Picture 1 (cartoon, rainbow, N blue to C red):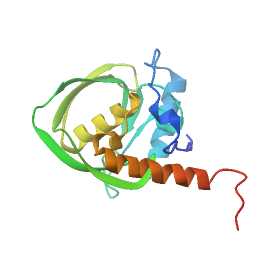
Picture 2 (cartoon, helix red, strand yellow):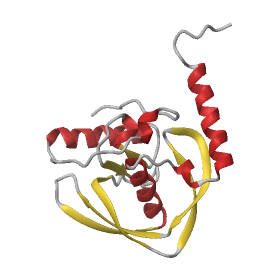
Picture 3 (cartoon, rainbow, N blue to C red):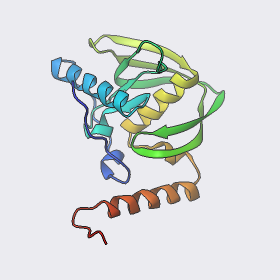
Length: 176
């Protein structure tokens, strides 16, 4: 497996709509492994394929703490079937928006259907951090970022900051 470069805001790739996976095969399982390696290296707890430039409806999540045995989950073509009326707030961050965190309110629980790494149809009832993480990563598959759930003022400030960082890192920029 290998670690892939992360797509960082303001890259327009992050706003692409990801395409459904048509076949679960060896290359797709390798991509899932690469995504897990990339997520662990970052380090993070979730990663959507679009965040490494692959516009496919696939994401990986592992909520195990550093001192726990890894518990990776691969979700292919995930779809939220139900969301609870009850809401919860978590401080979210994103590997594609490094070092920025904000409180986001989302449904406290979701029921999701997806294909696993073997192509078998699964359903998961998730609550707490897993529910938040699933919603965050499924948003990525739809071109939505967690900053789209915060106030326009805060979002505009974050986007402006990352546009400036990207401009400052642009090739051919002379350093004084």
